[in-house]
Length: 351
Image 1 (cartoon, rainbow, N blue to C red):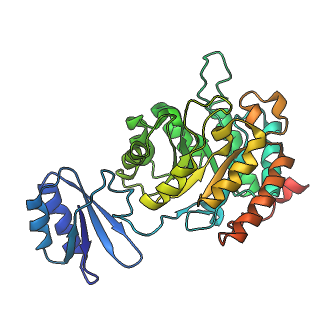
Image 2 (spheres, rainbow, N blue to C red):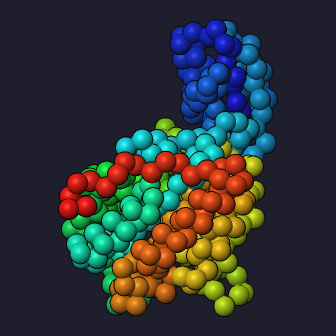
């Protein structure tokens, strides 16, 4: 249920509602909007609970939430969530952003060339993998903490927030220390302990949709993060597994449009994993703009033919710059211009 508080309610009245929810065995979570404050009651709610709370001082109305996902639903939170990052970068609210960089951090030189390239092309957030989930245990698994340190240093030097994937509960602390955004990959969409621990850090979390995850399962997974009093959640459509073998996955553009209607959370498109082919990244980015994506996470490598992972779907910095220019033109034409990127390259980057 959703308890809508009166405009002139007092903090004491809100606390009383929260305490009564606790008495009922519910978890109360306040959500402060631009105009109104609501309190979400999470748990098994019966009609008696709604009736009693509706009579409490400071309460305007009590609304039954029909969706099984409570905190991510627009019923609970009609306004779009905007996730605020360092250097003035915002995700959500109608102005798309680019997250770009290499699938795997391999060397300082490779990372720097990729990051400076995407920075010059107008990217907003640096991406790079330090921990890599690989189908084969013999494939490159990432550099771990040394890779995290390289990514954090590049972000600091270039004045850009960074995002990287966390694979395990044991790595949450390290990833939270060095990264501005914690990415939860498709294989971990329903790793509920990991979701909760990532949520507890208070860091923004990007939650990728599982390979066979339904939209409802995806939104329910986001509840594990949101329920830790962490409102800074972004969803990422990265392609689902279908009968089709011509592409790596099937990028579900329906999901982007539908989830934008069902949820207030920003939705990011991943055309790199969604197709598995570098030459499909640009057309699927443009298509994602048309259906309302709030951003794009793109794999960029200075030498894709020699990449240690996902070279076939990685753009070169030059190809990324070409794609970004066309994407900005289309976004402006449909009335959703891209957000301004962080400031100019740091002096060291242009020296």
